[in-house]
Amino acid sequence: MCMVTLQYDQRSALARRKMAALMASGLFTQVAMQSQTPTQEEVREDRELTQAFMEHSKRSMSDIIARYI
Image (cartoon, rainbow, N blue to C red; front, side):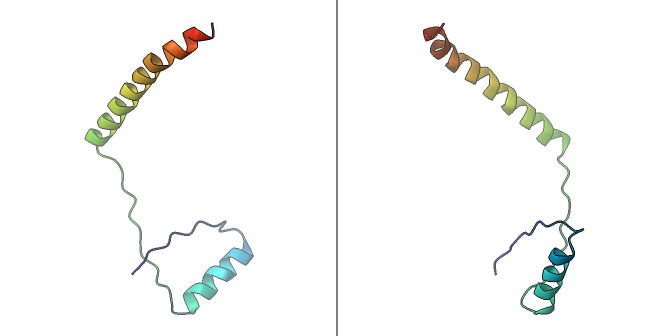
């Protein structure tokens, strides 16, 4: 089984009609998606990775920038 995620403007009448037609065909089912909030540990790890990337990219670019200054 394959999963498809659709994003559409819920205020669009055409989009709502098309979505209703897809669901009415019986070929598709709707699965409730749970919003997953990151844990404190995940937030901390993401922050550390971002900081490490930024620090590394500054060092890597310093030689290139120095050539053109």
